[in-house]
Length: 272
Image 1 (cartoon, rainbow, N blue to C red):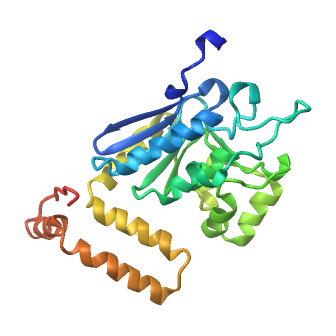
Image 2 (cartoon, rainbow, N blue to C red):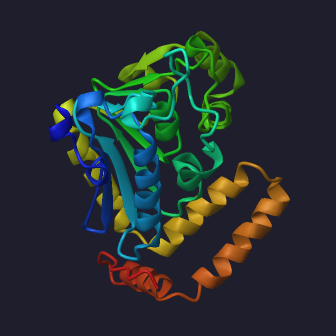
Image 3 (cartoon, rainbow, N blue to C red):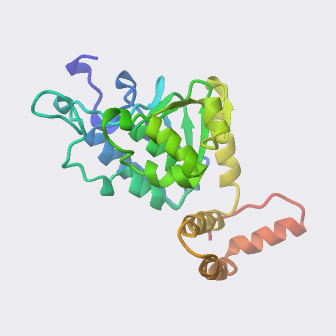
């Protein structure tokens, strides 16, 4: 793509909402959806927008083209996040990773599905790990090549992987820098299922509609409690769950859930 044809930065992360589902799409296929500085900011804004939109009950994140996200864009001349004076590339030391999408993603109250349509490498892999559910097309891959590049998983991977697959398997993946194909990712416990590439978004939307059909306040509270439970003792966690349950019992959605069960009909939840 020539300079004159370069995509406006605002179009590099697409956002649309339908059926209570927000879809966030990495839209830089010509560079395999590598993340530039402008995309970091835009992705953060898209995630916050989805979290604040009361119409959104579930989020899908995916990539356009043959990659989900091939990592950080390290080309300084193209607005990337890296660049050294000798012409080589590395992640810039001025990049504050605490205030970028992985942190916002972790704090997102809405459930989020990663529809991994191709390679998810480096930063892209960490971003996928930050999602609640990972679905993979057959061409999907998770590439933990950090140590092969002289760095560590900089965007949450060292936190997520031991919790997702245990210390030994996380160590194996990070220390070797191995790439897992879609079937291996499912076998390792890093993805829920593999589908044909052409069916990936249809399957992601099917699951998202199923989630969106449930009481949104309850789904968000359940996610919040699961996140809290990662780092707190059981007695403390049970107490926090009780505190979440009390306001839920006063909602219209609880009444609707009970009435629909008694009347043997699908519930119609309103999120209040």
